[in-house]
Length: 218
Length: 398
Image (cartoon, rainbow over all chains, first blue to last red; front, side, top):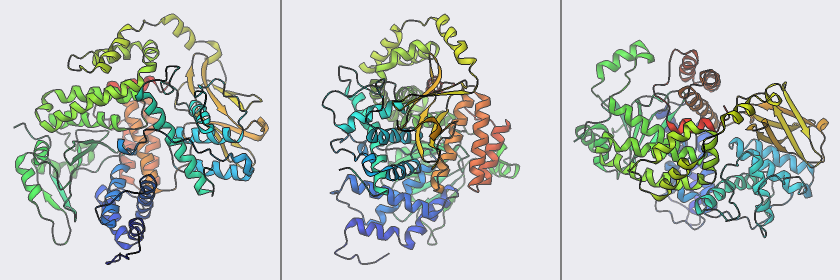
């Protein structure tokens, strides 16, 4: 870890530098020992890096008050503390209120079958819950083959973006059905928020996979 | 002043920022249930045996009274004024269980002390709160758990301010979640009248004055009783139970319907491309009026000869990251506990066996052995079912 930060480096760069240092590994080992779990400290650091990257993407203008090492250590502590809970809790303030689906996803069929397969493999191995993976695979299929019969699934209202139109049947055929989709009256605020939150998880996985294989939203 | 909830010996870790972590037991194979008391204090208990404290995390700005509620004023004062050792090693704080724990440690894990009445009550709150916090659990399950948190914390545990506050926020959370689950509450109640009746009783509590909870109670009360004859006929329909194995039907528009005779629930259809083994689609097997089936979307330019269709309880590969594999092992243990407490013992046993295997593959022989003992019936989860778990069971298809 550097004692004097380079004035040119951003907070984000300094955070990644700290995570690459021996200090990060020492902190990770200490946390793992305390919980008496057998995990590779490098996996803890990788997960921490992913969470920090995700936070920076969502909050590019956030003003940090603590040094990068201290911030990373807190995130790392939360990563280790959560592992024995069996799920990752997303704090309410980190959940989107409205899902931005205005950018259309590049239809993978336009880029050839090889790309589609890479995208599907990235989705399968990204380590997300079963239903998120299922819905993301549906989303890719419906992007590539808009003519698939999804007439049984609820449809978003007229004027929806192509992504919105794909997302509803993607979730429906992944088994996320009960009470998720608003009726003709538009549903309540809680229901819309729940749909938005659920859709964001799927869209997030598709975007993550697209970045892994070198493509993204147009 | 109420009695402290935890009186056991603790190991105190203090980090550079002044945060304290009081560690009691290592969590077992089903991991922990966590409750955030909101004043800079987070408690984790064993998920399968929630009277057992795993750890208490105390942030530097934590409210002292919350720590006192948990471990009593004298020990709270000692912990909060404790300075870290120069060599960074943790400090030990002996509790009332000193000799008992030492005897138990020598005799093996099955004879470890089970905790006090207060720790059992608080452990149940932690289990319920962990269900409320699980972002991927169905809203109705989370809402039910939140209502149960409110009820549990209104009793003698609620003499402690920090726990009473937890109950207040649980009511707000329950109302919000019930609002999200409201659309299909009536249909669910018709299909599951026994559990719905208990949920109605819970919602009808006079202490819950929130209009959204009252509305849910009204919906549950007004739901017509089901026609038992029709349901029984649907369940024993020859087209469901007499179907051997599974049946796959692929339509030209990319729709595949997979039917199975397996009514156990928690099964997924996995469709891969035969030549490359790339995963094309996943879909859950769902219990419907016409049997157990999954509806799948696949690329319409493929034929059945191009694809392999499999029905499995584990649709995704074991993750490469050791962290994700620990999470998966914990999920199997949590599932095993949830199945056990609702009386699904055979399915619970299967999950414990899978859980033991997952821990063994991680090299954690201690947790693997404990999970195996749960599978053999030598150990049993030390708690009863919550209503939230019974609601969850109605949504699993089991």
